[in-house]
Image (cartoon, rainbow, N blue to C red; front, side, top):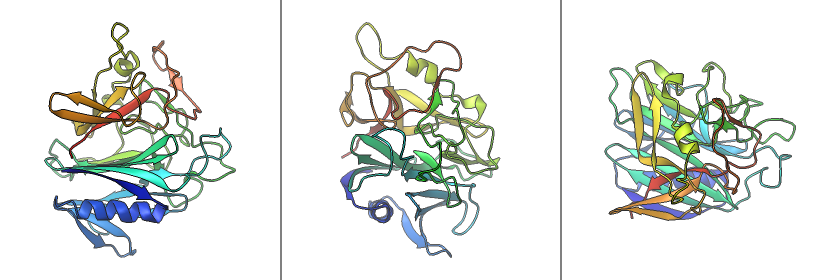
Length: 307
């Protein structure tokens, strides 16, 4: 287990840094090369291709070195360039924060671009499947090398943060920018909202409607009496509910990005889903959408910090 920080100057350097940090962390991952010439991180029955695409970088889960993938990568990327000063291409260099864990294996790689944060994450499910490997992968957005679904196209009208407290994303070209927050009805096309996958007994699955996030509870945070917010479980579903072991959702109205929360001997480092602005609401109505945003308001998450 470990915590690592540094600077990356390009998408290629993000890929190289992620691979090098994980394989050199002493937690059992090795680097292989697939038939396409891309790096693949491997441990036990987990295979994670790590690569760049035009305007982004991300990971593609696999069940073997060269095959058994979902329909798209997940990761970090440029955003639509016309929606506010805070969107548009990533501005390098970026800071990175990498968290690695075992039992179960989990890796969280966060980048900071100005006041924006994006992430790449993957790991082993904390529940065991009969035929599925239990590998999960997640990122700020769904990525693919096929037009128009990478998101730096100046002419493309989507690719904004968008989510609801019930787990919906308002457009297939948008992203919730959060791990396992959204669920969708399409697993046959590569869309930006397909930003988290799990290899279960049903193959590669998106979060199902039976595993809605704790969005309603998160929307009710922080406590109006003492301004405190709870660390809430990040749940995903592949026939059986599972949770990320070393990450939690949290409302960050009164918490700054990169602050450390102390719970006994535990330390948790806080990040916005994408970008924090101090505009927030208590949920009203079932399918409350937050659409076409240049931020994710005060919705965020925390990752266990082990030095």
